[in-house]
Image (tube, rainbow, N blue to C red; front, side, top):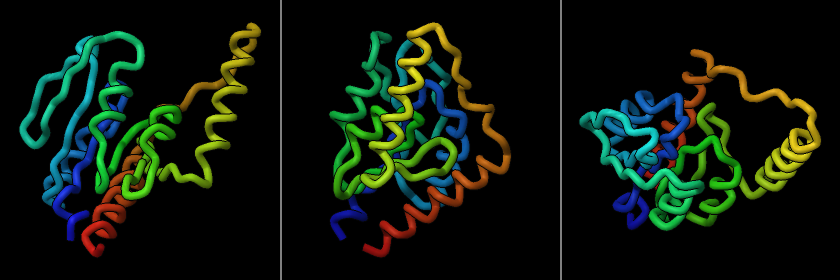
Length: 154
């Protein structure tokens, strides 16, 4: 029961393409949504979420989220580094495309990110993520709903 009372959705919002979908699912599941963004990415505040703005220095959003997250939370981020910081028992972490970060996949994802950065530092080029599709948004919504429903059953 304690897990249900503390459920929240915490969003790394600076480059999140599914904020509207998150707020929709949060409303339908009665789960509070916290949007964390830097002042450089200031956005109009809409009803249905609590907005937490931080300074624009490097990693400020990640640090704020890492210090804010607690047991029962679902974190939404496209950042593998942040995912690895908040991934612990009682916290679920979901990508903007609906893929759940787990202890089983996070090391591989971080290694891939490191190798890509190394290639770029050496003057090489790597492909960035493609624009999110409607199918991926639908997969995200389905994944978020499943996580929230599973947390209700605890």
